[in-house]
Length: 434
Image 1 (cartoon, helix red, strand yellow):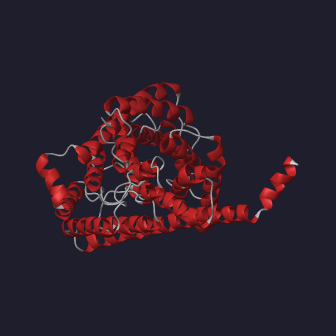
Image 2: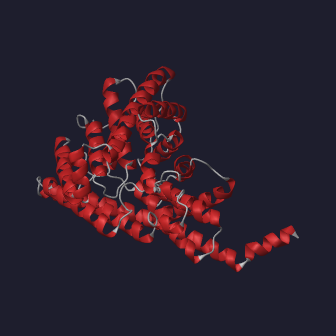
């Protein structure tokens, strides 16, 4: 009898309606992630072409573009600001549908992508991967109304699945999507949500593959370390990556909550003017780096990793500073891609100090270390870097460097970045009743 009831449930019209809605949301997430990636590349090319024609363009385009991005976000798309990962984390804890709708909706998803593309076309140092998490979660959360999902699927499974699918499709890293959902978005993994997440990741990943083919984000690498080299590279990359990653996290939290009083007032009372000032500072940083700090940083990281290109002097510091300046304006945009670029720049710098260790190995280890130091999610750092480079030869050094960097990063910045940023989207509890 139990088997018959199970079969009837499988073929029930209501169950199939849920599946179609859920699968459709995963397909839509994968397709939008691909479209967002293509649009991001076009936006950055537009900015580069303008700079080629008018070398002074960053000093005009960045202030005007960031001011317009902030005005548009505040005027039409409140809730779309920042990375998108803190909003997704907060949505998992918000108790009512109305509160979740303030951070996850199709309007916010549309605005997130539109304004992020405008910011990239203005030279902002942001990534598209964090926004894709919020877009995927928004799609899944919004589609729930077309089928009566159980409460658990609404509150956790759909949002987690959408966020995981966003990472998987954005980077073509399906394992990283699952690990990120477990380690960062939920910090727990329940058996009842596991199938929902895995299904969404698989469908979104297959959709992305069907549209753009099988690829690795940074291309394939194949590097190895001898045992003596490992004993040198892992501690150096892990400690320095964790240190600089932790400092960046502290800078992000300080920029959000600890700015000097005059800047806080300007940001609160004149956010558009504040964004224009940040745009001018962004242009100055870009000029100091020879234009290397504009955009996501993907091309710079690719050249350092694949071709052993020497990064411009102080690139990893300037790129981190450009990312911080871009973030503090409040424009939509993530930090995943810029963080990996900073890690690659740090690896390129370390290779100059340790020339006997293969360049590719040091860059890969530094990317994982810096990412782990910033996000404090060592498993995600390990898996995402392995999948992005399609290289399994450094698995053990990557594990060691990610864990070491996480410890160092946590010593510098005690609270995980995304968890801290998510608090601003949660309701503030009042004092206990007398």
